Length: 224
Image 1 (tube, rainbow, N blue to C red):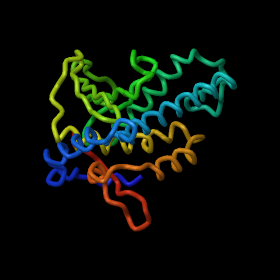
Image 2: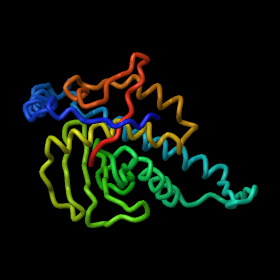
Image 3: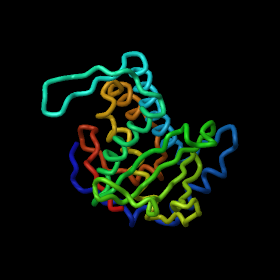
């Protein structure tokens, strides 16, 4: 994927535009209401399904581990699902961090860890890293739902969600599924169909990189 730098359109996505998004969400009737951030929930649900499929495959077939520097593959029994999920998220957060300039991890939390996982709420995390470890105290937590984005610090205390936060988070969440697909090659065709057919409101779509004539999006790299 082309990694040419993408600059969020800060002069376009103004406070007035965010107010317009909130207003349109409130004006729609409950039975017709479509949250402006529903596509982020769809992406999170898609990634959750990637993980579930990977867990099911390992539970059924076990796992193969390559011996470093040797052409040897060892077949091992399946791990506990929680351990598989943890390993998948470790891999995802490295790839998700590529979306941002500098050293960062960016990842979608495990739905099993959330007490409100049955609701349309997902937990995303961004943390600076030296490439190997992170300072737990510097983790930023963003809660997404079809209708809102909320920001918290590592201690769970609410922080103001600024326009700049939204300009960084929306493109990052949009590209997350594509960035982590290399972990889940068996899901590539299904993911492409779902992502290509995703309906994104115009007032949120302005945050995303422009399309090439071929239909492919420009590369991106967001400042954190």
